[in-house]
Image 1 (cartoon, rainbow, N blue to C red):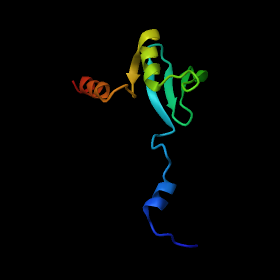
Image 2: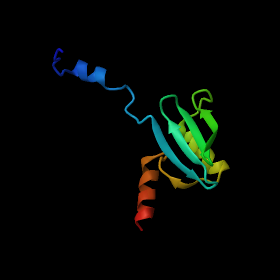
Image 3: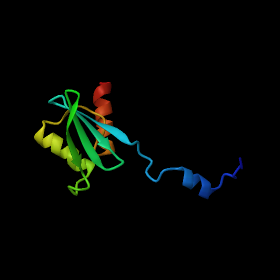
Length: 100
């Protein structure tokens, strides 16, 4: 076993290019469906009653996770519980509301 000195190059090789988690919970909509963002392939998975009836490939649709959050707000009456927000201010507003 050889020991390699820790340099910028060896640290960069060991770290993944995308620092985000593979799966990020978005939230639970008002209809009770769980929405999960899969960062590996830029897709959203909707889980209802323990089943995954819906998978949206955001890249194929030329959409972003922000577009998905807007869609849920407009077509599914928003989120009952939300973990991922379009902006930092949205996240902070939610934290303040919970704290009151």
